[in-house]
Image (cartoon, rainbow over the protein chains, first blue to last red):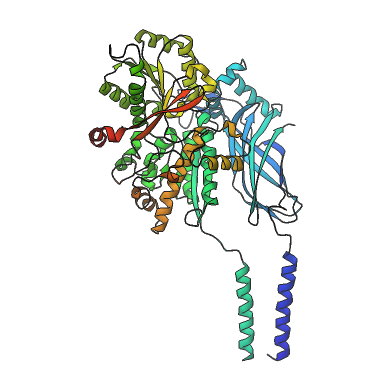
Amino acid sequence: MNKKSIILLILFIFLGVLFTSCASMQTKPTAANFKAPTVALDSVQVTQYNGYWYYGANIKPTKGKEGNNSAVLPLAFTFNITNPNSFPVKLDGFGFTVAFEDFDVNMVNAYETQWIPPGKTNQISVPSILDVRQALLGLLVPNAFKVKEKGTNAWALLEKWWTGIPEYNIPIYVNGGSATFMAGEEQKVVPFKAKFPQ
Amino acid sequence: MRIRNVFIILCAVVFLFGLSAPVMAKVIKIGGLTDCTGATSDVGKDYALGLSDAWHYVNDTGGINGKEVKYTWFDYGYRIPEALTKYKLLKRMGVIAIEGWGTGDTEALSATVFKDKLPYVSASFSAHLNNPKKSAYNLFFAPDYSTQARANLTAWFEAKWPKHKDYGKRAPKFACVYNFASPYASAPIKAIKDQAKMLGFEIGEDQDVALTAIDTKSQIMALKKFSPDVCWHGNTTMAVSATMRDAYALELGADWLVNYWGFDENLPRLAREAAEGAMCAGPSYFFGSDEGIMKTVKEFAKKYTPGVPLEKRLKFTVTAWSNVLLLREALIRADKAGDLSGPGILQKGFETMRDFAIADGGLGTSPVTYTSTDHRSTGIVPVFELVGGKFNHVKTIDVKGRWPEKWASEWFGW
């Protein structure tokens, strides 16, 4: 290898490093310039409808074991997450409570990490799985006084929800949501709440 | 020579690029099983949020000897099959310890965690979990329910009974109210009756009150025939408040002693004046306290759970922090010993603690000790009374110190 070749090689590497550095050069995140990303509920989907049913532990099923078995209502919550910054941010934690009308029925977390490019909007879909039995116990114990005050009963509410939500005519609330974002060493925890249908 | 120079330059470039790559820190995985929306969610959600806040605190203050903790938790809605499924998922994910919840999941998983040698730090304080021969990997920071119940009754006997008009004329009368079928509610009944007998109480018939009860008039009428001076309530807050309201309306006239998960900041909101004077063991601070590191606890609650107002947080947040910082200490010790396996965390972590003060006592907990033969964390139990919506310290009972022989030989595992 002659001298000219070596100089060319070094120049090539230098330019490569220079271009790579320039390409990746962007504003450094600081506490002052890190703007809070926004979280907005886009839609709620009933991912599979299984009807409304419940049978107690004393009923023998055709197959499988006895138990307080009941219809599962799987939902998928899709959120739009917008990064207003001039640098990418990492979604590092995401959780919220699901409420039917004003009763909390489920709490879910998403652990998938994702990067949101500068100025762009990503979507995240979070599943929520709930059955009649779980919701029933939630109504009978922690919400017992509230159900009574509303002049109704747990079974009436459950039937209304399990038949009305697939029709999208029962309000579903996202409460107490928090999303954790990271940019460099900086962190922001963003609260959010929403209602569907709006 | 020229080739060698080129090689050196290339090596230097590779080295520089290598330095600029992000350094991957080692991560410790911890799992969580909670009830935020099921039968015990009136107390479980606050505990779950407290766990999450506290693991953020651990990471923000250095992790486990510099290692980051990745805390993954699920709301299992107090459905045991769901808890078992999520346990298997957490195990597959490689967690080295689990923050569990109540008696339901803890007892259902006790044999499994024993077999798997996976430390399971729970909010179930059942004395059944104290025997390492049967449940070595079940641990918690608090005195067990039975020790709490013994202390609670003793505190009433010494602080309240001498002020009664019949003091010195007859034995005090005592009865238990709880859900017979609930493992949590029934766990300390044998112990508190044993304590009552030892202190000379006359004991009435037990009353069965469901965890779902909102009308307990028939049980109160049955109690009125016995006319107790003091009653123990073993359920959670909703049923406790319903019973207190009925007892107040029907003029039962007895004082109330309450199990740990039935006495919180919601009790005076639900039962109002009917809860006045109720007593409970307080193995850690209430959320409203400003003592110790409670300012930090509130800051983390506000920062990491911004959707839940501080005025809605309960003492169970502090309970959760106590269990998290207990596990943190066990992990730090085991990690320093170079062994983060389940047996390592147990033997080189938990079982090396002797009068260890969690957060230097900044959460209001008593110092804890675990040995290879006894997992009762402490026998020192502060007892509190609800007065005018505030929780006042009545007295602290050292159950182990007062009855050392019974503690050592009789009161183990129940």
